[in-house]
Image 1 (cartoon, rainbow, N blue to C red):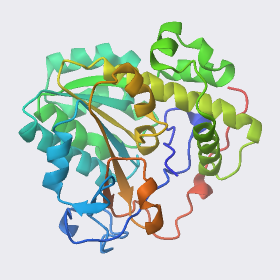
Image 2 (image 1 turned 90 degrees about the vertical axis):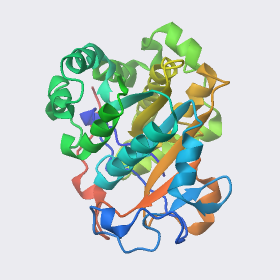
Image 3 (image 1 turned 30 degrees about the vertical axis):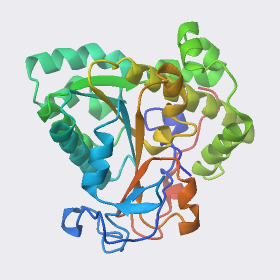
Image 4 (image 1 turned 30 degrees about the horizontal axis):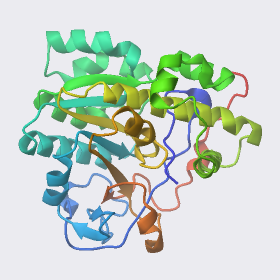
Length: 326
């Protein structure tokens, strides 16, 4: 239910990120006046902040106070939900005030091969988010328009954060799809544990999630290739984030499927930095998870927003065909 859309890889585009919803409560709401999307903006759950471990609603201040004590923070999003990016920006702004530490913000959306371009652009013009997007050729990346992500970048740059390009380069992802994770450096596989089998229950759940997220249009024998890419991306981003240790509070902006605690980036990050405090926030659209599923939410915190699309929207209608030989 939490698969991340693989926007950068045309042959593995997910139709939509699957979402959670929890019970309503007046505490911790962001306020309807702050929402961009009208779909579910009046839902009593819109704006709810939820502490998963304690099974209760909380305030934004409680959320920020907890996140400020972390060493690593994962902010899991639905890529095309503008409200999710606005809340990510709010979190970064709050952390800049509360943590007293430098922020290091890693982005799944910028592949690691662009790190030199990122560093060079920020050295020239450190506060210009639009120029940074130009430097990494965002328009050609396959991600949603930069205007959706601009609030997050602006907040990071305003805080003086170091920007890390954390995405697995597309050529390597294609190689993994065809040949498996063995094409990645042995050192990466060993230190992250990527070379080891995923526990069977997690593997089966991931396979089913990716199959369902593609609306059941894939041959079952293609699913393991998708799983290999998903795992490779998780391990790669974990490795990039772990390298920020000692430089400040490391934050990863990523799809919600990558941020989940059980089988996403945290699975590999715990091996890389077992003594570091990790927190994962799931930004969730209202209307998709029954209340009885709350306890199983694989995040530390949830923050609910309106939906990016109206009720009845069919994400499968626009799903592009998946190529078998790439």
